[in-house]
Amino acid sequence: MNKKINTILFILGATLFNVLIAVISFVLLTLLYVNTIMLLMSEETRPWGFTFIFLASIVASFLVYRYALKIILKKIDVEKFFDPIFLKKNRTAKN
Image 1 (cartoon, rainbow, N blue to C red):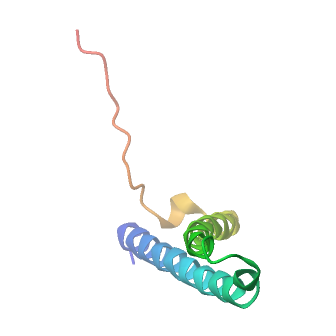
Image 2 (image 1 turned 180 degrees about the vertical axis):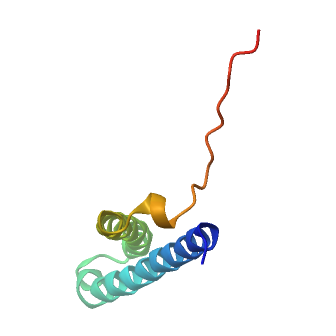
Image 3 (image 1 turned 120 degrees about the vertical axis):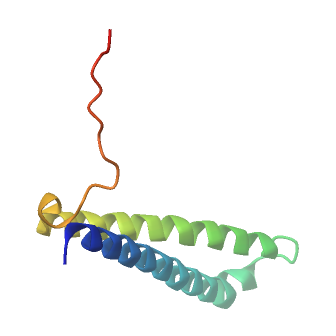
């Protein structure tokens, strides 16, 4: 496989991993909320819990994704296997 295919597959895999972590954290936080915290809250404040769960799952997926990416990038030589996504253009001054 060439570098471009490796880059595309890595981006697709990383995106799938990030979405999967977000869904798992959302389900776990929802179960925790329903089984423990919701029982202690009043009726008026219960809907806000799901808003915070949604935001917390996004933050958790970002943190887990970032940590996993750091570990992967330490083990893999990025320049050897992946193509740059954004190419730097050499701009020379034209007078």
